[in-house]
Image (cartoon, rainbow, N blue to C red; front, side, top):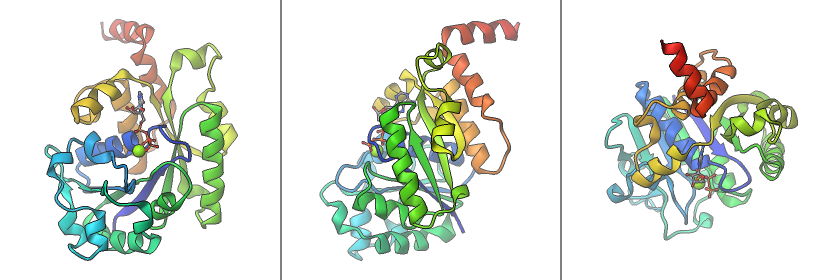
Length: 269
Ligand SMILES: Nc1ncnc2c1ncn2[C@@H]1O[C@H](COP(=O)(O)OP(=O)(O)OP(=O)(O)O)[C@@H](O)[C@H]1O
Ligand SMILES: [Mg+2]
């Protein structure tokens, strides 16, 4: 039976879809069978980030209407053959989906996958509740800014009200700027961890590579070996049960800036 994660945040634009796509790809790269579900009905992005928008035939709404089974609606990734997407429909609304629909769909898919990752829409309304309902664990994405942290805190409170144990709510700190944190101009990973008081699963640097890869529809973890790829690899390995210190993510952040690049060049000699 697959493990089910919801990737959520409260605040919009902090990187939920980026994390869902790249984490899905990284787990698939490690040979796991992964299904990513786009729960952002009405907007949908995950198909574009994965470069699969032209291959969609059926969507979540077709499944809910009973036109096809969840398995029949899946789109297989072009390069990562163990990664599948259940797409959202753009011409539907979040109110056309209920938490029970999502639970039924995920129960159908679970036996065929090692991991199911649900990309939640922004906010704490119906779409959020749909994404959370079938999930065992929540990955809360935040950036190191107060509005995002405050919304993340609210979402953690809601998840606890829904019955999530504290151990099943994990934090991912995205768009981390090493040079600013170092100069005290930005909250550090320790500050954020202390503010939200949940376990930190990983730190992902801010990187132009994300924008470049999104525009190509090629998830960046498939492309190159930079700091951001290392962060996703560390997060995927932690999910698989390996014990990798968070400092490893900060090392890769470090390698992303000029000083870090210089140090790593020097070390190679
Ligand atoms: N680590 C990063 N470095 C640089 N840009 C990033 C990073 N993560 C995400 N982005 C960019 O931030 C923007 C928002 O990301 P994304 O769409 O993943 O957020 P989201 O939380 O899913 O948004 P929404 O709430 O609208 O669904 C995108 O343009 C994406 O390319
Ligand atoms: Mg999104």
